[in-house]
Length: 189
Image (cartoon, rainbow, N blue to C red; front, side, top):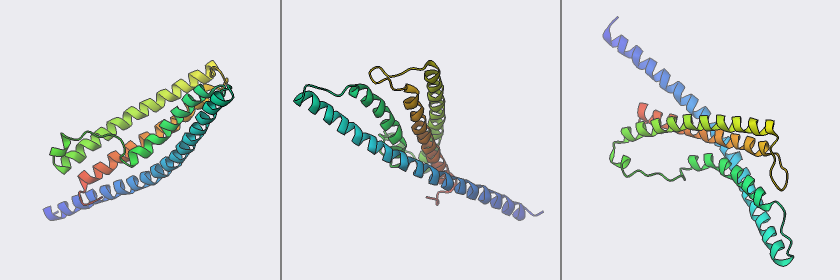
């Protein structure tokens, strides 16, 4: 075989690998964006419910000297869900704080390599967090733990946070693959 033919085969193999990576990344993007969109809408509804609950509690306390029982604990539980459900949407929209005074001075390729590595490391850490949330939820379920005033089963709330943590992990995985695509194929956006 001629060297030119070998180079063409290697180039075609590289293009096939890149196109399969692009296809996988686009499929992951569809799932991740949809999941985060749904969770963000749920988070918005939870925020509205928290505002109404707090307003009713303050009004009841002030005007009727009768606060709503369990407002404090319900606020804490719903706040945990609201935060976990909005993390992925914030990551997709790049709303999280980023300190880039050092990386800004690097070349674009170096920035994408570094961002890809950090996204994959954070993905692994979020997977470990999701796993530990699952383990905690199982322990709470087996222990039959409930909230203090209302007696709500805590495993429901800790179990629901798993969905938000998993969604955030998927978002970081997507960011890692998007950055990797920019390293492999700088023309790909």
